[in-house]
Length: 94
Image (cartoon, rainbow, N blue to C red; front, side):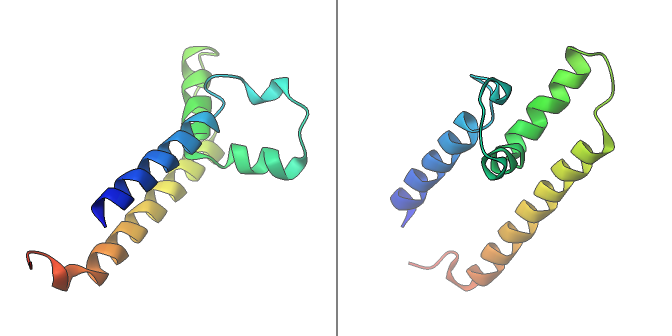
């Protein structure tokens, strides 16, 4: 199972990276509203926008970005907690 999980995580990381607008800004493309919503909900996109607002524009990121990022952090924690809790009986067994 572990090799399959490693491949899955590698795929997820690539999707998040290339879908974040780090290489090509998403403002250069004319896209449907739903595609833009999917891209802007990417946590790496939100993080990059927060960095840009601090470093490029010299202002604090909006509260909505902080809440969006916090929601992703809490969601990732809850998913991880449930997954590890669900499989806790199999830890350390052969």
